[in-house]
Image (cartoon, rainbow, N blue to C red; front, top):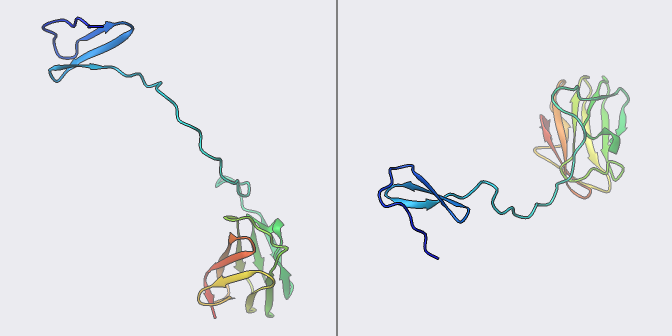
Length: 155
């Protein structure tokens, strides 16, 4: 089927034939394509992390003893340590974070805080101790029972 376009259109002129609109630009006719074209497949939805946003305060779990085992309920929180004595913080299978979830830690005391892994992989550079009072670190789950601690650490 032939379309009989106008012979001498001015630039920007439109012509509609068979429910299709054409526009004359750059010396030729171009078919106008509407924005509502073909829609592709919807991609997979990713995992949802702990609830919260920048407008709300991050919950704090205050620890003052000399030992603490990190729990799954600590995800998305700040766990603070405040003791003049040495503290041992254990990451084990009870931590049970999903990949991408994390926990923040903050040393408010003067005692040395040491992190240990039990039945999990726990990696950090250069080591698994806070460097000083007011040091902070974040524990990130990178795989099932596989964690990385990153922050102000020493060996």
